[in-house]
Image (cartoon, rainbow, N blue to C red):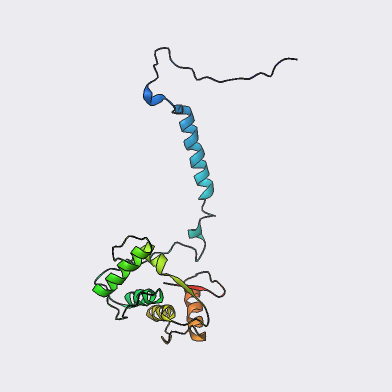
Length: 187
């Protein structure tokens, strides 16, 4: 009985090649190229157009407004109401002044975000809360004010009632957004 044959492949080196310290432990150029090819192939497989969320209606990545000191309007009022919903009592005057900046900075620091007082994508994602039929409070008021600002007028009473449900459904249909049956993100 013969012992099993073990075949080892050695890379041929030129006779005048002296391995340097930088060559130690580094894969050959051929292996580096193959590794890159595999990476590209995996990337294509994962990100083919049929599978990318942006190609399905209502699943595109959201772009959030960058809101900072000096801004005014319903978006600022929504931020103030969402801060209040998270326990950072803020006067709702629809003006991003020093008090709102201080509350935003405090909120960001408490959530390990960059405490710059600017409401960008990371802060928006932290501020968003879910609301459903029957919910009450400042988060629902934020939703109602934003719906009204985006051509779906509802009374701003802080109660997620049938009128608010109808406006949310209309907004989602108009913008081809997918709907959760009973939960809507606010923000």
